[in-house]
Image (cartoon, rainbow, N blue to C red; front, side, top):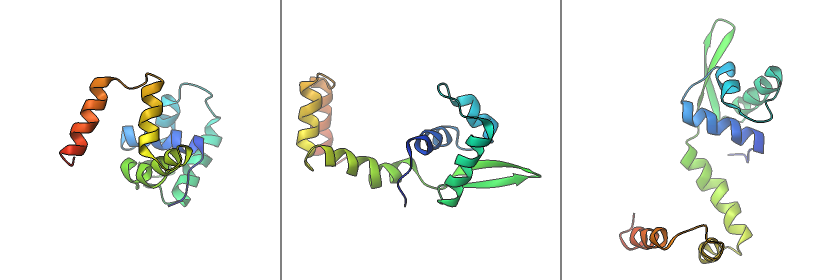
Amino acid sequence: MEKLTNKEEEIMKILWRLKKAFVKDIMEEITENKPHYNTLSTIVRNLEDKKFVGFTAYGKTHQYFPLIKKEDYYKAYVNKEMVGYFDNSYKNIVSFFAKEEKISVDELKEIINLIENGK
């Protein structure tokens, strides 16, 4: 599995949420920095080349759908890169968010409960 560019990740997030979409549907979901239709179409075709999306053809138009699960991508890249910023320590990640007050005590208790119950 290849690492995606930021724009490709943005498009994949839309496809994961919509489950299947035409390029025009994806375009409607982009709220900031909308690319030109042809640019977006090229990005989607690149995702197809990378085996992240498949399609169903309806004449000359294609409806795209994810081939890779969001969870699988995050396991492969997002978690790995995030941990890399924190010296490969999940403890450092949690500490950072606690110090920055981005995570509450209740959320920390919930995390502890998940760990203790193996879920």
